Amino acid sequence: MTTRSPLSTRVLLICAAIAVGTGILSAVAGYLTIPVVAGAPIFYGFVLSMHLLPGIVAQEMLRTPWVALITHLLAALVALAMSPQWFLSYVAAIAIMGGAQEGWAAIGRYQKWSTGWMLMGGAVLGLLLGLTAGLGIGISKFGVPLALVSVLVYVAGAAFWTFVGVLLGRSMRKAGLARTVN
Image (cartoon, rainbow, N blue to C red; front, side):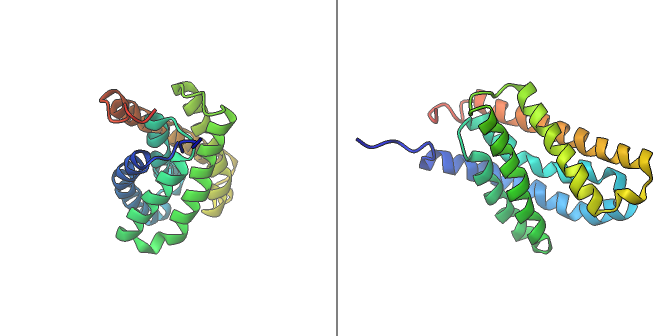
């Protein structure tokens, strides 16, 4: 007896379609990185969090294991075509963001898909990004109050983009684009 894989051709094609749109946004975020870090580094968390979209949209729409990681990989390929200078950043986004989104879904045993659950996962990821990427751009030089604000921007940005991703994925799901997947 053959077991059907949750990663059918249809699921992979949907992941690819999501990746094209969100990969373009990732390229835009890549181009915004230098001006934001140079001019207003405290707001970089909002720009960086835009990279959460591929996985969240895919998870909300398909509600299947591995779609966040696959969609992040494909979105990175799309973004690389437009901004190859950010190769390592896109690879990091695949590993960190896609991996964290898959991990969060796995903690919920791929059964918890409520907006609150997704937002909580986004906020946790935002905190992780704020404490790692934020330190990388030098928030420790901001002083304690501004460093805390910067970390809060990472958390708020991650929650915002997670919410946008949930809305996009839910809209596509309601439009029937995933009706034959599950």
